[in-house]
Amino acid sequence: MGIREIARDRWGGRMSTAIAAINARHPWSHNDHFHSWILTRLPEQRRRALDVGCGRGELLAKLATQFDEVHGVDVDQTMREAAAARCAGLPNVTVDGEPLRQVAGPVDLVTMVAVLHHIDIEEALSDVRRLLAPDGRFLSVGLARPGSVADYAWDLASTITNPVIGYIKHPWASPQGVEPPAFPVADPRLTYAEIGGTVKRVMPGATMRHDLGFRNTIEWTKR
Image 1 (cartoon, rainbow, N blue to C red):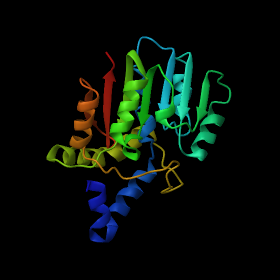
Image 2 (image 1 turned 180 degrees about the horizontal axis):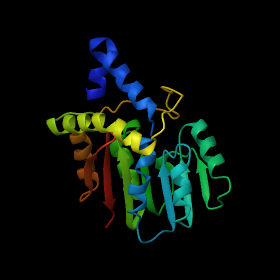
Image 3 (image 1 turned 135 degrees about the vertical axis):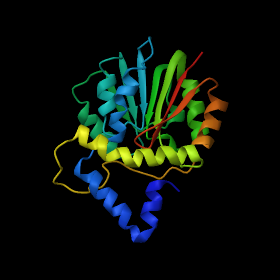
């Protein structure tokens, strides 16, 4: 249980409601925030890129300027339609609902943003390893359930800094109030350590780090 879950389940949920109201005044997309992290770590070879769980297509559009071909997959039809509309004017972008295990490689980049906690992590990472060309890169931004003192410290830091980052990114107060997420959400089941153990086993040499925004990052180059 993370800081947000504790706030939601204790004291009648009043703390959770207060935090949500503060964050809603200056909203920001935690997932989109990490696109710059991805764009600064692209592989040298840039023929094909695959974005798994492409959502509304914002990252696809950015990758389209860097790669010959960009392919997005998402199991949610609403997200696929939004991504296709977002990238309608980009001839090197395709979007479909093909399962990851059926996607054909090789590709030079695989990205996942807030995706791994929705799927079987070992199967997904094995598919990524299969798909990547030599020197291809895997870049993931994910969520994990806190399970250690360090995890809770990062969770608390994210809770404290979240409205600050929101104010910097969105200094004018939003009149909309608390809005439902624009994409499917799920609470992470695995802890940071559990995810890290699988990453280490399937992708030796990968780097996994905590980050603010209740996120962690995974970076791996196939050798």
